[in-house]
Length: 110
Length: 110
DNA sequence: GGTATATTCAACCAGATGGTTGACGATCCT
DNA sequence: AGGATCGTCAACCATCTGGTTGAATATACC
Image (tube, rainbow over all chains, first blue to last red; front, side, top):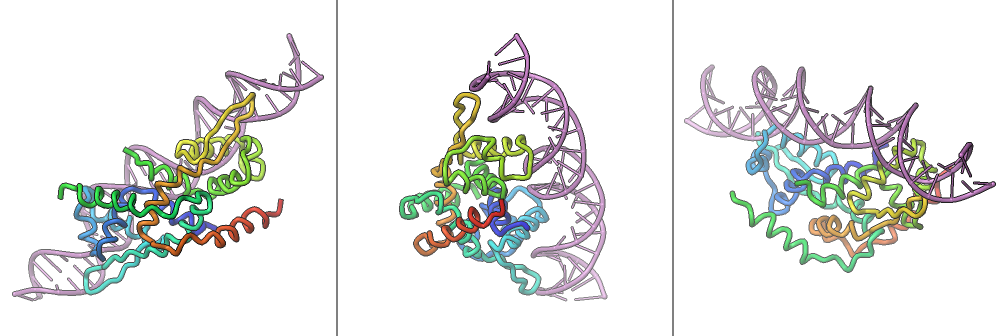
């Protein structure tokens, strides 16, 4: 009876997986390319991607020998609705997110 | 270096903890009262509450021998901002959340 | 003071989680 | 065919997680 929200929130609970999602926000990527910036084995990243796919947060399509990963932001919808019910936060502050993104993607020494 | 988002999302990943939060949405509650509808020991609920407090999602204030738990929805803000960056979901569908709430709180056979 | 109530603490346990390595099956390239 | 690349699988390991129980600590009540 593990809910949709269970898998989504626990997928989001890991910083590696969140970073993968922000990477995929820029473009679809192959598994190897996703793994490249991380200091961890390819197998580990492969597992993370499986978890993200299990939560519906990404889809994976195999073309040839490379498997492409695509962000599926709609999977965040139920979680977002759930959270918004508590907050009544001011109308979605996208500026804050953009600031986060710049720091996350630009500030990295690769 | 566990981020704010780590603790918030992993706190939300557990169905018991999410249910506690929705209970607190109605009113502040004592630990014992929080535990009552669950089929699990008081100690277990106490641990869950500690985790929720650690994530900032609730605050706990001891008055006399009873410890009151209060929802702190602002702790959801950073997580909400993070998620909204992906979705651009249509302007916060509160109806869906209310429907969820009714089912969650009303439909329970206790 | 003695007893009941509220909550946490400590030790323990089974199972999940996040990582590793090495072998493996596909696919592409010459 | 043979070799390199892409990705997963399987076994293993340490640590975290979510639960239990029984004892301990406060506070309230009579």
